[in-house]
Amino acid sequence: MAYPAGYKYTKTHEWLNVDGATASVGITDYAQESLGDIVFVELPKVGDKLEAGKLFGSVESVKAVSDLYAPISGTVTEINEGLNAAPETINSDANATWMFKMDVADAAELTSLDSLIDAAAYEAFVAEETGH
Amino acid sequence: MAETPGVGTASALRTTALNARHRAHKAKMVDFGGWDMPVEYGGLISEHMAVRTAVGLFDVSHMGDIQLRGPGSLAAVQKLLMNDASKLQIGQAHYSAMLYENGTFVDDVVLHKLSDNDYLIVINAGTREKDIEWVRKTIGHMPSVHINDFSDFYTQLAIQGPKAEALLQKLTDTDLSVIKNYWFTWGKVCGLYNVMIARTGYTGEDGFEIYIPSDVPTSERVWNEILEAGAEFGMVPCGLGARNTLRLEAAMALYGHEISDTINVLEAGLGRYCKMDKGTEFVGMAALQAIQAAGGPTRKLVGLEMVERGIGRDGYPVCSLTGEKIGEITSGSPAPFLKKNIALAYVPVAYSAVDSEVAVEIRGGLVKAKVVPLPFYKKPKKTVI
Image 1 (cartoon, each protein chain N blue to C red):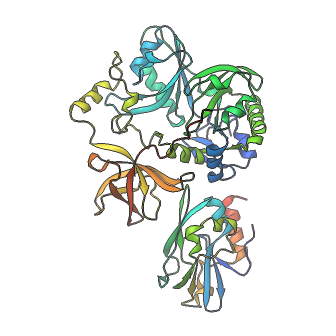
Image 2 (cartoon, chains in turn cyan, purple):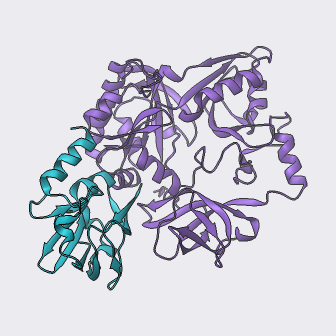
Image 3 (tube, helix red, strand yellow):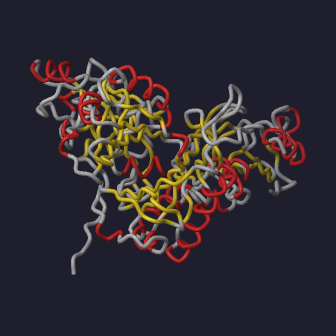
């Protein structure tokens, strides 16, 4: 499984792709693989203020519900409406499928948050979780 | 990992003879009632759809098999189980249940009449030990009946879907077209003699369950031969995930959810399998008669369909539209074939009429649902040319 090097990751399996003052958020390939066929996504609303580490929505497969946690703090600027009708898009390409975009409220969080790790650290974390 | 099918240890899960096959298929494995079982192989939805449109193969060897034999078997079965076994002909099976004295469920079962002196009771995996104990305690003292636990002797395979007959016919000379629903026979399957072939299943589709010797080499050989023969029909192996969504669409009960030791037959809506006029008193009958005399059950099992966006799942509260908790979902999930979010739930009788509006509490919010007729899914009738 490839984890794009430019992204940041959380141990709750969200990814963050920062582009200047905005960032997009999705879930990792490991997360979609573990969930199975995704049938439902509970996205935040445009304008919602998110706090790093706090619960903001959920992703559901037939068998399971997985809570989603904000990787950083900021305000939601755009949501991927297409996921309501076609949530399985996440299964096809988790790395490329953004769920929502947000502004970066505090750029310092990108380096100061212990919960935000790089691709190599995330890959190692997953390897430990799965015992490989 | 234990080598002997069915035998586990304090630390290891029990395994069926096909455990290595499931792992070779790279199935996602799960602990199901102490058994290491496949929950999905290629994907729950594709497995579910394969059963609804073609044919799927399930390893259900974790289920148990209790045999009662001897001239006293019928009398014993009539006391032990709620349905009327005297109505069964040789080669016929029916759905039934063992009840506690208070009319609640020990387990649901399928009873097969092998001969006048020989009955096979197929029981759930999670209740194997409890059931055999209950059988011994309840009828073990009755005259001329011998109880045998054959659970580990069989690998039980379920072949389910509209193409099930066409597929299995490739592997047996027995004419499957004359076996009616819930009847069984014995025949040569995959070169094995006297295999029990039953037109039973837990998916709401046509299908068969076969019982073969549980040694690993035989089990693996037959599993492989079935999949090979099934390839032309689009057959796939199917796990417990699809097994659950299939039975839910067909509104079939699952022990520990729709039926349990705190739920009685009348609440569960299974009165049609409960023959209180069969002429023998079965365990639990008096309690059920008392409930009927007192006006019937106060809560009922209903089918729900989510109306607003959201998935009601097992254990989620069911509420009135004003938010008052009135019941609980026993089994709830997206339905892959119906493409709706469905659930079974217990609600007070006042809310049980079709089209009643209720709400399901999902992570703190109320999401509207409505009561719908059961079953959610019925297989299409075969067109007679």
